[in-house]
Length: 399
Image (cartoon, rainbow, N blue to C red; front, side, top):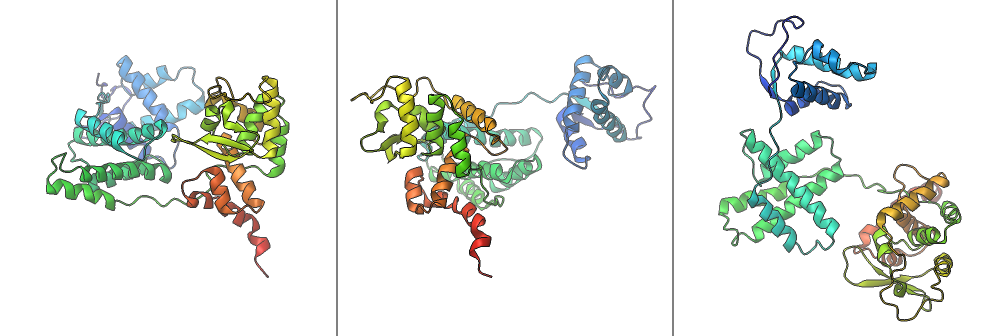
């Protein structure tokens, strides 16, 4: 229900011209542009407007007093600032946001077919990421069309879209991921132009999408890594044989959390010192070296569950029963905290980075580290050499 424009007893006269009408989201976005820095003021203002809409109150000192009864001063200050902003606007009419529309069936079908036929998307998580990114783009198109703006899968629209993502505070990395998915969809549509019955003009517009530039992302360490002593302390802190075995597989072998949950007893080949790993998005297992330092905690764990020596020809029994990736993250975070190692950027996946970094620090050749981590591209493995270079920069350069 639209809010009453004002209360004559406590609001100054509005400008001579009729005040504009704003949706809640539009007014809050406008308010946010007046703030000198990012803050929670818009969030508090939205909650206040939603309250007024629900109660049928005007946006004024009367409703503000009722709404903020019992609030602390730091909660009231943002709302007073918003009320002053609203008064300066001339008390425009405020209406609730229109209900969100689902993206059109045609767009839904296009996304589903693209995801289904994309040869590079093998894992469910990758498919979910692409679906989420593409649905966000089509929601943007629908929002633009509702506002009377022209929007479609063209270079101009895509460029406007990533500009909006940037204004919303999305990181350059996230924006580039979203842009990449849209570009791949556009390229796929061009490839399927006959099946989709596209006109030459539509094909040209789709090809323009490829010219849209993303944002420069400085290659940094996505995750921190531990030093040798810190890894030793982490493993020593785990009293449970199960926890210690999991931490060893993460930090000594460099397995991903999902790869640990997939391990079977049969995947541990003690005689040949191998672990057969089913990688992310893969259908076949790859062997990696089972280090002696990892074999010891694995053997202790297997003794604790009475599976040592390992049974022969057991092709179905999981190494860890009912283990999930969430549980692995919990175990890792618990022991990182115990050792004072938990900080921003330090997680279960950091232990995979630890494996790579310490192997390189010990002088293992890059191609062997790539083989052990099972990276498709050596460029991914080269990423770890940057940290090693920064560590030795001052020592290596001559005077």
